[in-house]
Image (cartoon, rainbow, N blue to C red; front, side, top):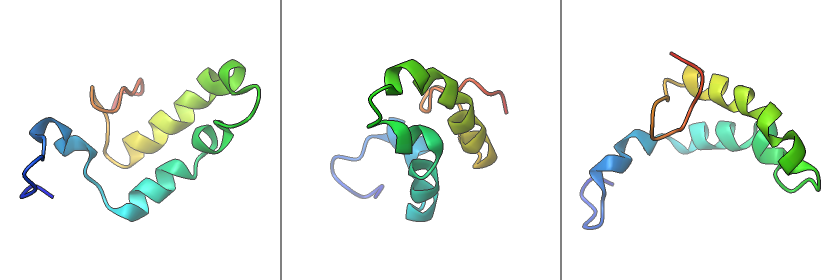
Length: 69
């Protein structure tokens, strides 16, 4: 990935195994994004996403997390 001509070093923090991406996209906020009331309940699902990212060692500006690590 880092050898790709269009690789952007500022995206380095977003590199993780497919298994980790599957875990992230399998959590509540991602599953609920097509629900008709997602906008109303979406903010309430953010802590779960942030906690999962912190558990995975991913936090900071790239992820826009609110849970300190």
